[in-house]
Image 1 (cartoon, protein in one colour):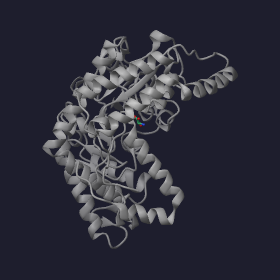
Image 2 (cartoon, protein in one colour):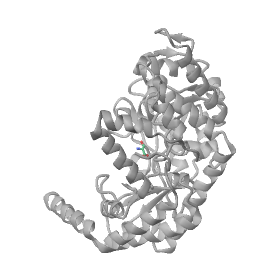
Image 3 (spheres, helix red, strand yellow):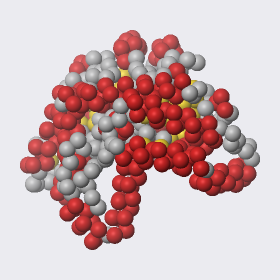
Image 4 (cartoon, rainbow, N blue to C red):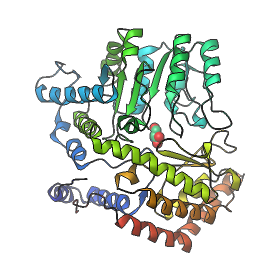
Length: 454
Ligand code: DSN
């Protein structure tokens, strides 16, 4: 990855606000010296960061290219038009809106554009790996609309028969396909047929796998679905933002679909777009169209598979016994229920950042789930390959074995005390500190932003 020296920018920050400078410097050190394995995170290029930190942050530009409310938008129009055209080309769609502030408002905008309050919607259940905004009860999407979720089967794969049953009996206006914790290829084609039979709109939320699709490492949903939403900062490796895209199939179903979505984003839900983010998205889309990105996307999946194999070899169980994408979902129930919190914290001490997660049919609660979610996008950006995955897999298995004996008390007050004691113990745990040193050593061979020297 090519990088530029940015000491000037950082020295200005240091002078103006030493407190912020210090926090940013510490975060940079954390990212450099540890293994970032939250599957929804990544490291953008310096070019993306430069655009995100540029003068474009100074501008207001409500409206769309050529149709702005304020003056002075001739260059912003260039930026937004480029982002739109690049998104259309990369994902094979006929319309793209690049203004959503992030994934959750993008998903809400789609629902508001397609449904009336009270309409039935259906998405993968949250605790089966689905996303909050696909109709979970604590999200507005589950309160404004009648949510009838579908699930995964005991083997962890999406229950397509259940989707069909819900589609034919409950006639959802929107069916979501996409997830936040699902490790297998999405059945876009099968769900496309079901949506056609039942009359539903099929919306693919590809937030996690957008970069894999762009790089040819996952099937594209565009021939099968009507609408696609995505964040831009996960496998796509852009700045934090989102896009809504309409496919040819979507425009055939409703020729006004693109217009309805644009109007729902602005003026329906949002104000001025974040033009500095739009420029960062345009750059990420350009980067994702290059041959090197195809290699990157394939490597993410190869790395995830190598990591999965190593973990399983070391006795760690995975939901669906493997992965087709960038993500692994570790099932810790062989050691008891609600173990995710202990493993997440212990891995943190060891310098490996993951997140606790529910697993399908979790015997514990979403607050104290029985799984761990991890992924390879960020460590692949650093240049790590299968050999490093085998090392990391062994280290993760060692950490899990080190803390598998901790048991979460049933009583809520006792639980807090126990967790406090646990945290103090793992912070001093010799084995974890030793692993931390191995992790730092490994990271030192895969430099991150080497020319940024605060
Ligand atoms: N928070 C994102 C993730 O980690 O998957 C989804 O919103």
